[in-house]
Amino acid sequence: MSSPREESEPPSHSSAGPSPEPPSEGPGERGPGRPPLSDRDLAVLALERRSWPGPGAKEREIRERLGITPTRYYQLLNALLDDERALVQDPVTVNRLRRVRAARRERR
Image 1 (cartoon, rainbow, N blue to C red):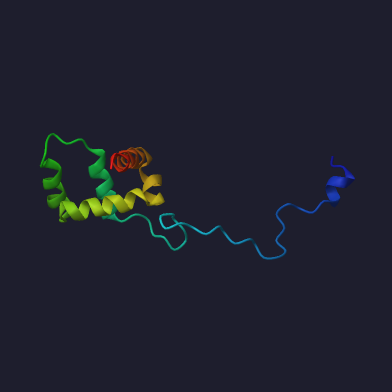
Image 2: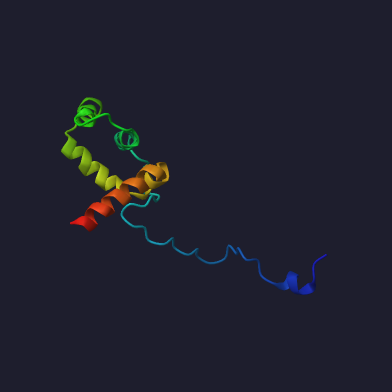
């Protein structure tokens, strides 16, 4: 049974009036206009999850699997690290790579 005071209070989710605008989104955040990560972006994240036996193996795989140069690969990877969609997709890998990138920047 509810008290008279509870009955007289307006509902907390009133449909009257305009709804507040969503907060503005940063460059890497997913919003209504942001598509999901591309297959290429997912492939870049998948390559970064792997460990590599020696120098050259990763670069060879980048060329064969993605058909791009290692330089372009690292440009795409760096942009992915700033993309919140990538963080949602693979938080362990993205956070690890963000830490590595931050450590390299501090050494400079």
